Length: 317
Image 1 (spheres, rainbow, N blue to C red):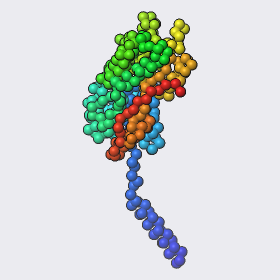
Image 2 (image 1 turned 30 degrees about the vertical axis):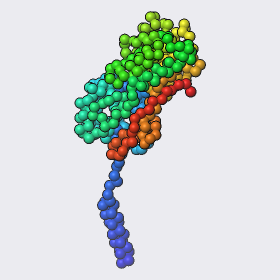
Image 3 (image 1 turned 120 degrees about the vertical axis):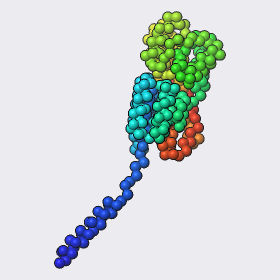
Image 4 (image 1 turned 135 degrees about the vertical axis):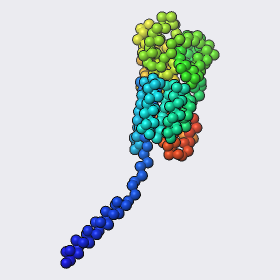
């Protein structure tokens, strides 16, 4: 009888535990997914930002989905449409063409997806991370001004500019470069063909060189283009590398390494102006990490604390 009673008691206890388990409330999942819509992952700067956001999201148990438009606006539109279908929580966009993306960004926003963009204005974005593009170009050109004064004691030499004007923001940066160099007294030669990649930068300088071999330097719209121009200049045996300089805008670890080599003239890429990072809660933080923080806070519906991006000059270390 005691044995039967014990068995009944065990069954009752097991049934009670089972009932409690089945009635327990499910654990709430606060994780989220960010779509990364990048204009060209072939650009080291773009790759650097995307990789940093991925790492920051992973560290907090959140997901990212990366899409590379490879410079094609139709690709980017399709990729953002795919993010809408996937019902991601937010999309971070480096736009190929802000005007062409306006409609799909509106549709994403209407679907309840938060939108953060960088590199220029984008209609419909919740947060536009940006710097004063004209001043960014101006600061890059001023690096050339200071270098020329230190090497030649003047600012009258010939400087080639590789510009980009496919968006209003790109044109502002290019104008900041051109206007500053011109006002300083340089003989400024602006390439007719525009460049965004290392291959384009090398090709354009190579084609211009016969008519402009007396140039003392080059200033480019972005650092990837500058790396291509540097490759060409370094291949020339008749150029005094100690008296030639290339400056640009934006950066990455690879670009910093190339700039470091200019200390002993193993490179003529002597400096750039990078985004120091966003100011959040009164402090400047790293660009990828800060971008992730802004996106995360936006999704959570709390104050993002963003007060703009800072730019910093990057020279050999």
